[in-house]
Image 1: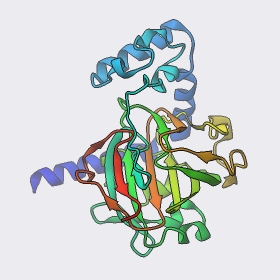
Image 2: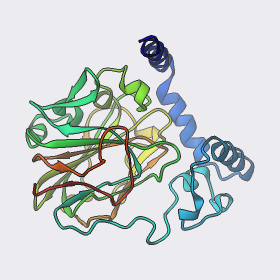
Image 3: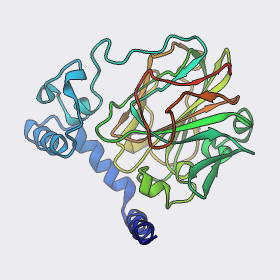
Image 4: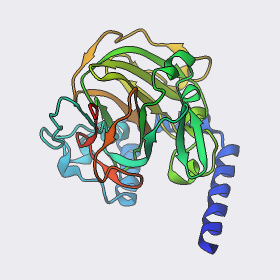
Length: 292
């Protein structure tokens, strides 16, 4: 009990600190720093990150020498070598779009998704669109957290056709476990890019959630959707890419810094064994069966 109280106190303190920080200003600064091509700046940041995260495995990268990348952001969004992430070939499987950790997953009950123990948020709030939220009633979701040491490109979990993309402005709280336990409606409050698809097994949605220090969210069809100058304002539709077909495992987007991807399906799915909160997942690993 004492340990839980101490953890709760630390979480509350961390949340309070984020509330008073100039979140967008700090993220603009990180956006510029991560793109600096000055060797001294790039090398300083690279060395600090490589020391802080020894889990980074450069042997998986197409270019294994971190100091050959033109900027820290180029290193951070590095490409994997061919064959590093085999993709499940089952036509009715939903595969992980990223390397990361399962934060939460389960059914979308009465339009609500589980954020943390005792905390929920709504599908309507997350998608910022009432008709869209209705497509996922009774469906399933998986919330996948990307740590700084993870691969940060996002790939398609199944064959799908893009039907709509919208940018939703918001705050930039951290999306780690401590913040998820503390900040109500975290994923529906943070800046995000919502991408909805049609598939043979019904509707699918990928929500790319921004976070503190996430310099931008970039897609293969629209480029950087939310670089600092374009942040804020109102919900806006992105017309580029509508109607484009994507194949399972195809690169779709990337986080320029880390964050969270939330996968929504329009029907209940059967999650694979060992895909559960707290467990790591890898790109291409089966998450669920769509025809269960």
